Length: 309
Image (cartoon, rainbow, N blue to C red; front, side, top):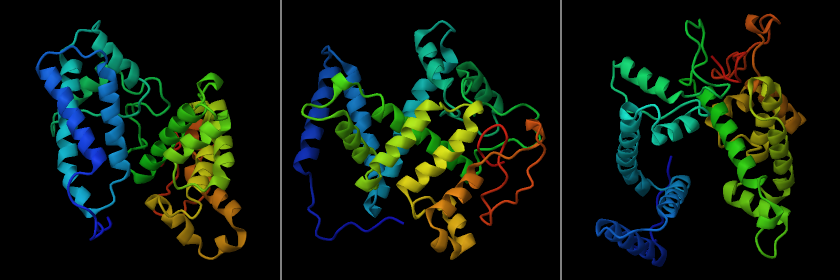
């Protein structure tokens, strides 16, 4: 539940917001007047970064009024991209750019019409969504396919993407690109403070080790065993008490006081079972005899990807 805004909070525009509004109107006016802007990419990326941070900091009830505006923006963007997918010829560079990104994404935003599955499938096939990921399109005629309708599946996917993002941002820094008067390690820690503000400084080195392991074993069907441990360690690093992931609350509550005695190692073992792929007949090892956790979300996981069915 969102918190109430402080009663004594100042009203109206602050200095930073006012400057941003003025700058945005100047940019809009210049485009409407037909002025040539040298680099539109910086306008787009800057706006996207502001929006990204607004989403991360939505904590008051007043922020709920932004939901409709976000939905309108999402519809406008998706409608624009859908028109490219539906109408562009195969050699259109805009379509090729979308395909390049879509092949590495397990899911993709589309405008959908209830009951019109033909339209949705046509767009997904043209974009080639998920062709280069181990969590791509569901196999046809699968008896028990892993579904993203399951909350635990969505959590696992979100964590994988989150770790990959941290790897790209923090480990791809080149020595000659380090901030002035800062070492490479100090720059990485500065980025981690911005991207994972809830982690105490004492855990930064542990998080960097996890990210190095993730880079060493890129996410793929062959690296699922390693990623079971990577995801589990990442969760314990950013949320050792399992307070920020609703899907994981049952893990700790189901076992009760035994975690207090054995600490983090017991939690890590249980998390690995939660995220671990089940050994069913498709792996050639027979079905797993392990019972699922008390948490109803922690069902046996797919042998294809680390997600529950």
